[in-house]
Image (cartoon, rainbow, N blue to C red; front, side, top):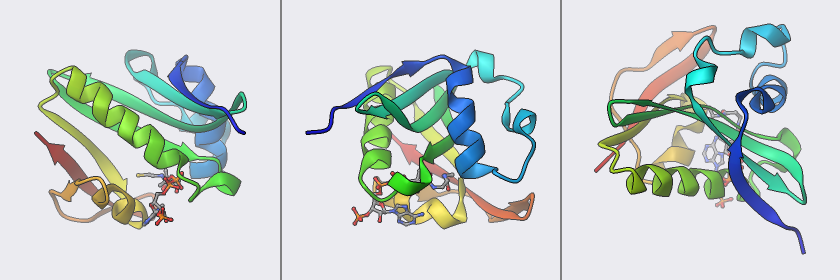
Length: 137
Ligand SMILES: CC(C)(COP(=O)(O)OP(=O)(O)OC[C@H]1O[C@@H](n2cnc3c(N)ncnc32)[C@H](O)[C@@H]1OP(=O)(O)O)[C@@H](O)C(=O)NCCC(=O)NCCS
């Protein structure tokens, strides 16, 4: 049976999956965020292998998550859901006023399953459609 774990990871451990899943065409250095060092980063491992990552940023109790990525060959196997549930509980435990993200429109159906609602217009950045989505308390 596989062993699945979720734990905090150093920010630079998110970079490889972030690059390979979300921006394979960009130079590696461009997937780094200027404020990565200020975030809290989580990784889901399957039998010790890093399989999904997400980065969380707290501004006065409003938590934004960014760069959510599950290894391409292991998507749609429930790992993203496990990590998102973990984030929801983690922020609830910290009395977050809000958990939100700028979602890729292509992933909005995934977030809606957890109660996130669209809260702004669709906009385009680097040829990708985005929409803000929030889970309010
Ligand atoms: C979005 C993402 C993080 C979801 O992770 P995942 O590990 O594939 O998610 P899960 O396997 O837990 O999916 C849970 C359910 O949501 C569905 N789902 C997954 N991705 C979806 C999507 N893009 N749109 C709609 N539904 C989606 C799955 O089909 C699954 O449903 P099922 O249980 O009925 O089969 C992952 O697909 C990913 O890395 N995508 C590419 C990068 C990306 O777009 N990141 C999000 C940026 S905002």
